[in-house]
Length: 425
Ligand code: S3P
Image (cartoon, rainbow, N blue to C red):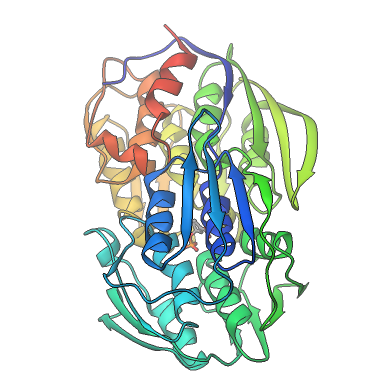
């Protein structure tokens, strides 16, 4: 239940970035030596990755204490055959990126997940991994997957969909393959896969939208602190944007340029953001953000911006009615195959709050200058939808009930209490 707020004020440190946590865990598993990963994501998705790695014979433990430390013993490039299906839970990142690793192992792995994951498209990894030499059976291109690993051979692959998960999957497979694997992406997507591979000692090269890696390189375990998750911070940033008196400090936040487009868009919309204490840790840029709310203009999000903002669109759309000119999102068909069909989830919840919204095949048109009323909403089992509408609810008239809001724990278990700690009423 979310009650309207007057303001957002305070300071918050975010749990470790989900994208980076997955990649660090997967690479630590196939590295030589021990890795110590501080501020590892507390989300259920990254726990799915850790669980699968345990089933593949990788030894790790979570250390007690406040710092969410995972210590993992690398198994080298060869893992152990699992004696049960790998449970990927709700996590598209786990099934897609881990596929690249098990495809290069000399055993069979079955990978399955929950109902939402079982609806998500996997041809995007099946096709290229098959041409590298793996055999993959699926349910019409969807999970569960049965992957018969093999000695892979490198490929040159032009990705039809812009997806960092697919790019990372293929780079990981490329690391285990003979020869060179060269991947061309249609648009530049988040580069945490490349940055993490380098942090673990691999050499890879990039030119424009092409990246390539030579197989057979050995990785070395690392000690790292995972930067705060910018996609989780997005909810607090958008909450701050709703109130002209808001003041927020976000510490230890990921600022990787391939992820930080949200900050440019919010600044264009009227939020004042200043960045201090910028530093680079294992190739990832981290900083502290001071944020002040102002007036909230509208935005149009298309093309490369849509790809760069893909996880932040739910919350931007949820606050769109409160902006002056509204928000239009296009080229966002991928949103229809996320944890829920996010275009229809967002449209349904906005309408339930009394907003006018136009649902398009590839996006949404949401006029500005609207006032919303508190309502009973659905999370549609989608963590980002649940969190996005708790932000919209802060400026609505009356209380909002979000059913199934516990799914926020997929990426951010402490989200609602952290939000409650920041709002003033
Ligand atoms: C992710 C990439 C994006 C994003 C997901 C995490 C990643 O998915 O939506 O939450 O860590 O690479 P796609 O690769 O399907 O675009």
